[in-house]
Length: 513
Image (cartoon, rainbow, N blue to C red; front, side, top):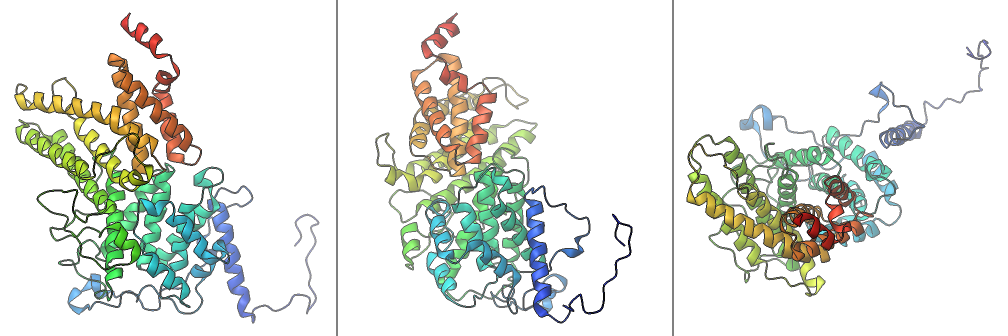
């Protein structure tokens, strides 16, 4: 019945065509419903989300069902092929909908990614990716989803990064792939890149939750421990695939530790590496597709003459960050004498300083092309050191129940000297060569707060100059990075920007009075 005219609707026979026999209609309707749901997720005012979720299109499951014996009774389980849960039968809506956002040339989206995020998160093999894109059909239904996430990371969002339709589509398809039961390296890499996008634009708690999903999926694929953990998949056939899996897991580990750097009491999503864990091979050989030996993570010393690449150094820095976070937790919960913790702090200081030294020396006028590959590892090292030193730099009594001891005074002196060096020297080099890498921006922000503290205390010219360089860098990057913009807002809220805007002579005179 017509609501406006209060008349009964009548349709003669033959007016409405019978579409029930048309096999394409159902797929087209599901496609339109998916687009409507994505539009709703991106905040479009024209779509009203329905409380009934039955209209959501159901993506087909993998061609092989998940072996339930893996969880129900491991004695009846045998490892399956590594692509058994990655394929789907027929034309997958997941593949088709991701491809529609990519257009006719998905390779161009890949190249944009390789020129940006890949420089600090080199986990994807260009050789394998191009080979899979050339193959038809691909063995992995989530291949185009990965390329979509690569495009997301390599494209500057229009408007607010959280409201990007491309971001909404990528998140939606990742969730649907997980619900469909797909388990593959390409889906895992898609989640890692989604986290990288969220971190780069300060989208929290989304980044914290997404990297947790990636960690659990990686654990299910037993990427965290190939020796003692139950293996879901059979052993990989190629060296390149093994190395790509290793790099992907290290990427998860780095981002998981990094996302917890401010809230160190939250539990990690990715477990600690095993004693037999290997580091990624050096980046030059990886990019060229050469097969070379891998270096172990656990070693007695760091060196600047080994074949360890920049990404492997970042992995080592993340491992040291994990140790400092655990140390911080132990210090907060300690109710007795902390002599052992002070000795541990000194050992951590020496280890992280040695790791930073193994990256080489950096000069203000050095060629940016030689600094850029090492900058993520350098800044993550520096952030780790600041996290350690800020626990001991304060001259107020610590957490000991006994009288202050000489070790505390020694650690305080070391902490103050190192904070001063990092803020006045290393931060300036990082600011003059910075990119949108979240690890670089995080260090620059905290270095700026340290500069502000020293300026308020003794108005050193070196701190003024360093703070000026940092603010200039973040101001430039905030146009393209949501994270840089968030850090600038925090510096403004903390009255740090006023120190740059104010004439230093006036500030010194005022402080003297």
